Every structure is written in structure tokens, then in C-alpha cells.
Image (cartoon, rainbow, N blue to C red):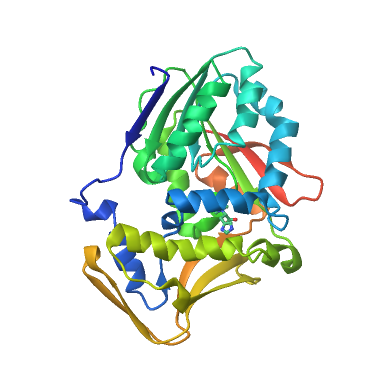
Length: 325
Ligand code: AVJ
């Protein structure tokens, strides 16, 4: 199929440890144990995340989708036709709202989805090609960093990188700055960056979004252990850990952990790593930062990504920022 090309940027034989696993070793040997959040998104994790997006408590997906529905055509008209590059494309469900807007301009669509889940990327690419006959897809399987450094040449004169769902919230301020710099480096003057951000709001709304009644978010968290077991020949026992999450008001972030219910030793054979846990000791598995609109606009400006326009929903829960390089 000439309209579909998928390139796997991951290191298949782990000959280069910096691309696979070394970040797990670093994370699990720190005082506060932690695991980089991209390990939440193996094929199974990506499936569970799709279920999270449909939960009644999890407001971000539907809020952002509504902003895209309401303002997609304004975005497309501002940027004109451009190659669409998505960081963390997942199921590409919200991407369809952008496609619909760009398609109305009457041009062919060029799309580069970037995701660490090869299974999810391939499945959604095939469905998109079915539904959009004038679409060409050049998918990249890998981390944002890997992909942004290896973008194929664009068939169009302009590009737009977009990063939806507030996935930026998974990254500490310093890492966000690095991502902005990588985005900027991958783009040319006159190109665009579209960023979806979850905004600060009350604990009463935030905490249930990460601790749903059906336990889907807990399952998403436990799957991280299964993934590490599969990928690095580990022996984590998920029943020896508890899902624990809360909103840290001072830092403006949801923090999510797996808490060891007992003293235990875990091995990841493929990484030659042994990890000891005390009873009650935690692995921090995710942060989800909640942003302030003006603060982020300033930061983007400082990084050479000039904010052109910001759209929000009626309750100011979520924002979509369009920037120009
Ligand atoms: C995909 C990173 C935006 O932080 O809200 C949802 C991931 N984790 N529920 C988020 C997530 C638990 C999500 N992001």
C-alpha cells in the first residue's frame, strides 16, 4: 500500500541501551523509584488508555474533542494545508476532527503519527486510510525524541506538529523545555505547533479522573508491571502493589504511584537488575501536571514557539494553543 509506510525507530536487539531499558535502570535505582511514563503505553496499555478516555470521570478527552470540533476549521484556515505530525497519536480519534477540518480546505492529507505502541499505530493507521481516501500516512514507532530527530522530508511546504490530550503534563518543567526545543528544531520558520493542555481546577474534579470507580485507571497502572515483565524478563507481582494517586496542590500535578504492600525483591533479568522494596515503598509511575494558560504561553514564546491563539471550553477546563515558529 503506497499510502501507508511505518518505520520502527526502536532498537530491536537493545544493542544500544540508551534507546531501550537504560531509563528503567536509572528510574528504579533512584531514591524515589520511578519509571518513565512511555512504558505505560505498550499495546495493552494503549488499549486500556482508550477505555480511560471514555470514563465518566475522565473529562479531558471529551473536553478537548469539543474544542477541536468547535475550532478545527479556524485552525485549518490559519495554518493552511500542512503536513500533520502527531506526538503520541494513540488511536488518532481526535485527529479525525483535524482531518475533517483540513479536508474541507480541499487538499490531500499527509500525516505522520508518532507512537511507542506499534500495534496501536498500525491498527489506527489502517482504519484512517479506509475512512480518508486522500490520506497518506508515514508512521514512526518510537519516542517523541527519537521521532523528532528523524522526520522524513515533507511533501508540503509547511508542517504542524501537534501534541494533544495534555500528554505534555507527564513531563517535569525541564523536560517540557527540552520537548519544546526538539519541536522547534524539527520545524522551519512559518511552521506550526498545536498543544492541548489540561488546566488547573479543583481537587474534587481532578482526583476522581485518576481514580475511577470501575478501576480502569488502576488496571492501566498495574499493566506497567506486566509490560516490564514481558519486555525485560521481570517477575513483578501486580498483586503485591496498590494503585495510589492524589492531586498535589502545591505543584499543581496529579501524582500516581504503585505502592509495595510488603517487603519484596524484584528482578528484571534482561536488564541485569535486582530491585528491593520495603513495605509501603512506592514507584512513581506518572505525574499529570495541570497548567496555567498564561504561564505556558509565556514559556512557549521564550522557546521560539509564538502563541497565535488559544481556545478553551466554556468552563475553562482545557486549552488548545496554536503557536507559530
Ligand atoms: C495521556 C498523559 C494525558 O495524564 O491524563 C490518564 C494519561 N493516566 N489516566 C493523563 C492518564 C491516567 C493522561 N495523558
